Image (cartoon, helix red, strand yellow):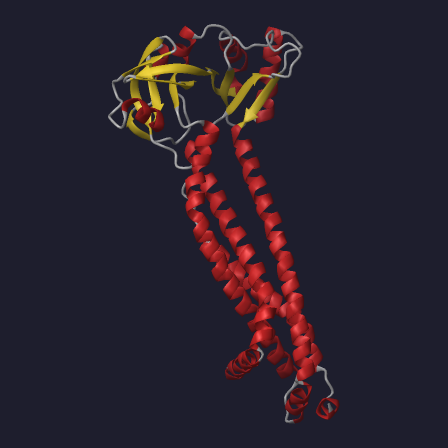
Length: 397
């Protein structure tokens, strides 16, 4: 161990003697490591934030709607009464099914008027959404087609300016609804932008009263053990029996969409990491080049060491340590810069996707691993070349 520390001290001294050359050599490691650390940190934090926020939404189930690109979408329109037929025919395959509505409606309350989305709901939900105040829809609300609703926090604040919304009446599409609950705000501008941060929810039975005609879609959950393809095909068969063999429908699996989104994010991160890997490869070649120059410059020193009893392993260890330390120094500086870039981007990530944990352990592991790997791989050949020098020829040089 003492000999190892002695070699490390000699390696640092050699790096310091040629510090300008060493700094220029380390630049590739700094650029490559910092870019990889920044990409890994930012992408992992973003992916963790997205996953955490989506998990809070819970299982969104499936949605089946008329294919808008079908030859005759009007004849394939799903009717309210179709739900009862589906329950009767496919009961064992279904855990839950209900009509789904989503319309842009004009709403008015507290002297404020706005046009935004109203969506249908029921007592059945598998999400983990938190309420700021009030309660969710229950079975009585659905059976009685009660004129009640829930609001998102931004919509409640828009109408009531921060005052309690419970019990207030909102005029929605020509009807009156009493507010029974307000959803807590979802952190993350990305989710607000794709899902709309202002919407109102009411029982689907209430929705039907002022929106007669076809429903927008079917929201459903498959029974345990039933695959998405199986339930989708079964429902399509029943709907085609009701609306004609040419009727076409689309199925949206929200869980699969979330997984696809995460895979896309990881693919982008992998591509960007690969670009950083190219910089590390160039840095490794630079380290090998500078170590070969160092071997040439210190040929006589190598001959002297061998003549007084240094083994080939000692020479290999000396030069390999120098390459690893050179790689470590560049990697360490790059890691610090990558950390700073990740921390600077964190506030933007949190505002976009919600709370996003930074994987510190992953970042440190990658930094140490890459630095060691580059130093070992690209320092091995120069070290072996130094070790196999003939001591007599080395002393004569």
